[in-house]
Image (cartoon, rainbow, N blue to C red; front, side, top):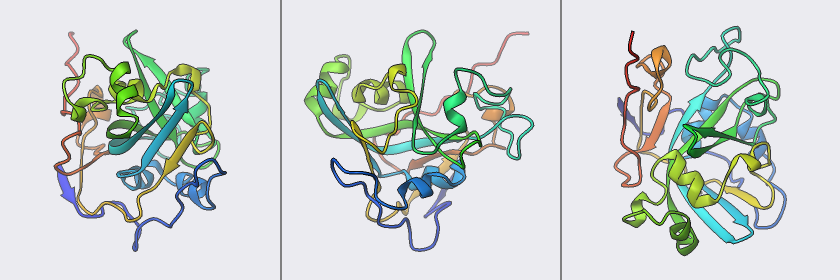
Length: 232
C-alpha cells in the first residue's frame, strides 16, 4: 500500500474539461476516459458524478476507485476483471465505448457502477468504490435509510450506486450525457494512495495488481477487505 502524490497523473494535471450542465461533454473528456484505466482511475478522484433521475438529482464526489482491465488473451490480462474469460452479454459494455456505465448486480442484493475506459473494443473500466454526497443528500438518505452518518451514505460501491439511484437498467448509458454528468476537479488530487483491490479473489486481489486508488485520509473511503479464502 502506497501514498503517492499525483500517482499515475500526467504533468500539470487533467485538462479543463468539466462537462457543462445540461450540455454535451466538453471536448477532451471522452478522449481522457479512452486511456488506460490505470491512468484514468486516479484522475477520477475528486470528480463529481451526478444522476438527475425521476426523483431528483444526487451528486457524488468520488473518493475511491478501482481499475479493471481485460481478458486472459489480451495485451493487459486482469484475473480480477469480469472480462478475464472473454466477452459475454453481461460484460459486453466493458469493451467500449469509453464514458459509458457498466453496472452489475452482485450477491443478489447490490448494484455496482463502473465507468468504461480505454479504446473502443478494449475491455477496461473503473469501479466507483466510494464518495461524498455533495448535492441531493435528502434524496440519497431516503434511498439509504440505514445510513448512520453523511460520510457513509456512499462509502462502498453498493452504497454509492444506491445513493445515486443507479441500477442495471443504466448499464450501457452514457455517463457524459443527460441524465448523467461527470465533472473533473479543477486540479488533480495530490495525495493519492494505492493498493490491492477489495474483495478480489486469487491473483487479481494480490499486491501484483495495486489498482485501487483513494484520496488519502478521506473519511468516505471504504474499509479494505481481502477476499475470503475459498475452501478446498
